Length: 282
Image (cartoon, rainbow, N blue to C red; front, side):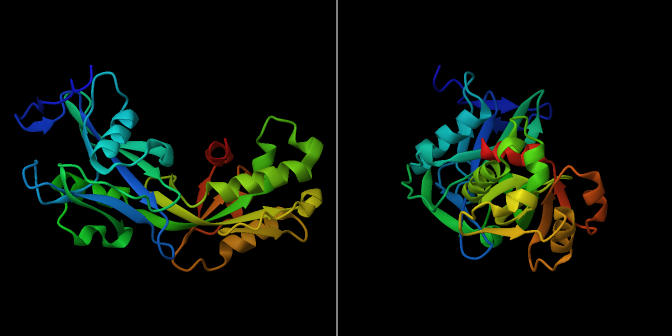
């Protein structure tokens, strides 16, 4: 039933936590200036728990809901966000333990800074540059979780031939057409939050797609944030050279399953498997 999650849960130490079935919040990002995304923060009403602090929209999960459903619902109630404009990317348990009580942060993106309408649980809502979030007085729970949730800017280099080769859909019958479809999908997928191998999160706002061979004639969609590089020879050589180039403030991440290419990448470059990026294109 709706609302059966409201109430306190108690841990083995007697500490109380809001949400009989646990709680969830929505960490929503949207493109900001430069490589810094905006994060939607809620200034909590004075009467609420830890009132006057800043956090993300969230609340108790009802028994029939998933954590994603609870986070999106709470965000809609507290900030007026339309669910259709939110693209959930994943979730992370950021407090508690499964045996007693948990808080799950659902992280998501919006294509633009969305308008908000605060309800009685909020003093105000604000889109805050990510590098300024911790300058505000944060809710203690959110403050503890924030270092593990913040992103770093990522320049994603895609080994297009390898990515297409991982798809079981006969792409080789029309390499140019399949490449154009993939490039369009990459252009539509960014910017976005993504989990990085080894932990942590990236904000992918720059993508370089390396094409080779007969796929080199594929049309460039001409999208902002996507650069198409046509390899003069073997694509692996171009990918490796690009990964060696300074990326400024960005972390370099390469999409490939090629073990030989992975071995040639510079130390510090992250590697994503093709399966992670294929999910972006579905």
